Picture (cartoon, rainbow, N blue to C red):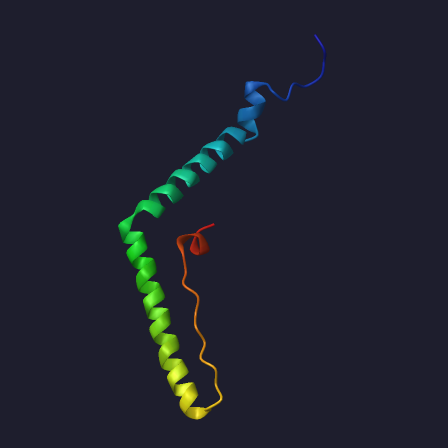
Length: 85
């Protein structure tokens, strides 16, 4: 047999943590998929967007009173993909 180290040896793969990285990636995919389907998460994100919109509406109103040339800012709506990578 050759004296070269085999990188495909089961012991080497486990010791390098490749198996654990694959398991973590799969678990992350499953978690994200479940979060996308969750009504609770969607409600939380909708509430976040509503709160941000109300805050900016109030700020725009005050800024318009102070400066008649002020252009109101319209915040973007957040999605789950914006918050979870």
